Image (tube, rainbow, N blue to C red; front, side, top):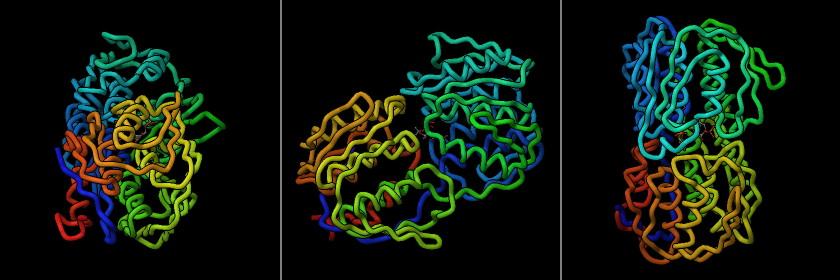
Amino acid sequence: MIEITPIETIDGKIRAPPSKSYTHRALFLGLLSEGKTKIENPLICKDTLATLNAIRKFGSEAEWNLVESSGKVKPAEINALESGTTARLSIGISALANGESVIDGEGSLRRRPMGPLLKALNDLGIKTKTKSSGFLPVRVFGGEIKRDYVRVDGGISSQFITALLLLGARIGLSIEVLNPVSKPYIEVTLRTLKRANVKVRRDGGVFHVIQGIKARHFSVPGDYSSASFFLVAGAIFGKIRVEGLDRNDVQPDKAILDLLRDFGAKVKVARGYVEVERDELVGQEVDCRDFPDLFPILAVLGAYSEGRTVLRAKHLRYKESDRVRAMALNLTNMGAKLKELDDGLMISKSELRGAVLNPQNDHRIAMALTIAALGAKGRSLILNEGCVKKSYPKFFEDLKGLIGDDGKNA
Ligand SMILES: O=C(O)C1=C[C@@H](OP(=O)(O)O)[C@@H](O)[C@H](O)C1
Ligand SMILES: C=C(OP(=O)(O)O)C(=O)O
């Protein structure tokens, strides 16, 4: 548990941690590629550790900065911990292994859907078995892939598509994508595939992946999702500069820059850094379908913005927690005026008060609530704050660097 004391203002800079999405992809592409793959600036956190362990079990010799592989995948027992990306990409890749793999996970990951990916693998002639239909643990009987065209429903997660795109890099595959959410994450996958010399031709909603992969070097950019918590803190409480973000990146959560401008904050994008400064904030209607990980911190921004903010995306409830419910419960506890919707949240400008907050073991909820608590009346307690290790182990250290232990704390 950590105590958060309200602040009057914030002014400082941090360096964005490396991107989680790119690090996962670089590690898996290192496994699929014969020879040595160097990874510069990987994110070291619990989720990427699950992936590092997974690619070792699948047969590579891997350290954070270097993966050495024969390019072949052997059957393995994988514990994806609570990382959806690790689980889904491992399920896809285990189709290549000659024999039976078991993909399992912990905590909420066992409640997150895998069904559409399993169906796609079954359609490719790969048998899978689950104890509870469509959920971990999953047994995959890899080996011969009998078809080169598959259709996948992307309405719950884009990670199913990423998994098939990586599979395609080894076997050649055409993937027809229906109804995708979190679409820009597919762009992140395509960008890393290009870096690994994999050719992908696009024809409307169909991706034709041409077999062939040679990954040699990845350089991981800063993470816009992790940065978004502090960028929003700058917009609400003063001024914050985040270094290490690439303005030409395709990361979905780069959308935070335009969103902050829409809400009314001052946003400066320069070479190598982004700076956000407080101004009058006005509530907005935002479709979060393409950037679901921004939802928790946008809900906080909504509570500090004039008028009403409406945030929607139907897949928000399939994450580490039911993120709509988790934010609604905790912000209500802080006195926020809000309404939970089937597919999101409606929130009005609110006077927040300090409270005991339960992030439900969801890192993004913990970080968003911490920022909310900085402007509340009275102290807050965040339970199980260690869950931030899932994506941003140094979050509280960076926060302390910005606001200090005392001094600026009101
Ligand atoms: O591919 C990725 O790196 C991710 C895709 C998104 O998931 P969904 O596609 O399930 O929305 C996102 O929420 C997750 O944090 C990371
Ligand atoms: C949902 C997330 O990750 P994953 O799906 O990989 O568990 C996240 O980081 O917010």
